[in-house]
Image (tube, rainbow, N blue to C red; front, side, top):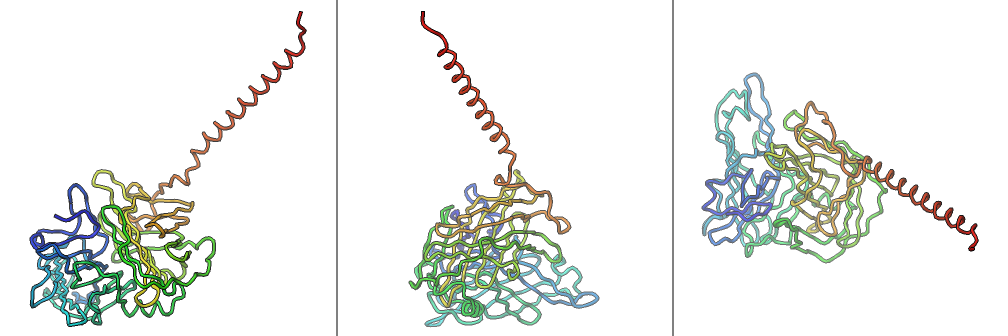
Length: 436
């Protein structure tokens, strides 16, 4: 079956029965942290397609009284029936089915030098969950190219910023994309083709110069650096303020706030030339998704972004924790710094509570890539009425343990003083007697 990795590997015999979330693998529960996070393999167990992104769908439809818009992330419960590596006449296909009669698929073709994807999205306005008051009950299909432009063969398409594609009444918004079809030797390429938005962002941002490309894949809890691109080093960064400002961020599911976060965020990268970069809360944008057992918060500030991935520990513990962190800094074309680790274990707190830590915390994503967190208060699950619940404080903030330490030290010091005084007194007493 699947190997215990943070992404799924799909092979043809398993497609008809595989569900994305949750999936029990040899006693391990693998949680979905992206709307799509798959690696498709052929019958020889060779990868032909790698796809990882978050996808938001926005559909305008006719309601009983007026036109309305249904906006949602791909739900947790999906199936991949129809996904395959293709054959001699057709390329790989990634097919997703969800809800009542809704499906989304991307078909890939290639030329001598490039590959291109075409998405086909069929939505059913008879699905009362997604379209609760639709006037017409019908299936509608729209198609569009994605990526918008052909991608050079043997390169991975990457897009950290939002990439919105509109077709008729449907807008598909892709975020944090890593995609490659027709993998050479079944391996994800270290060479990247950036989307237009990332290229524009990189040419206008002074944060990172010609940074070497680095991509990380987390395997069975141990992150390994597996790709190194152009060798020109990044330009030295201007030292930021000692401490970043604290921002307040929210994630919504429809109109309901489902995730709350207050924090100051700083990146500390020493992999090449040291970079210390603060996130500006005035320009940082928050996005993400909420689910029953997983949640994600993405903070983007210009060319840099950090994803925080949360998961519920298990069905009986009633605790959540920080499971993963993704870092990406877009430099210039084909130059990106990135690191990923989905095997972390931080910020464990009881469900229904928020997590609070006033002291600085440092999270090592991989050696050389660190995230510094300041004045943290976060709640990714069971947010009620858009307000933080009671906070469970981190051990760094717990000053109560200092009290017995201080009292014990004071008592030990007092005992030392008493014993010393007693010994000195006895020595003086002995000196007053004469030997007979």
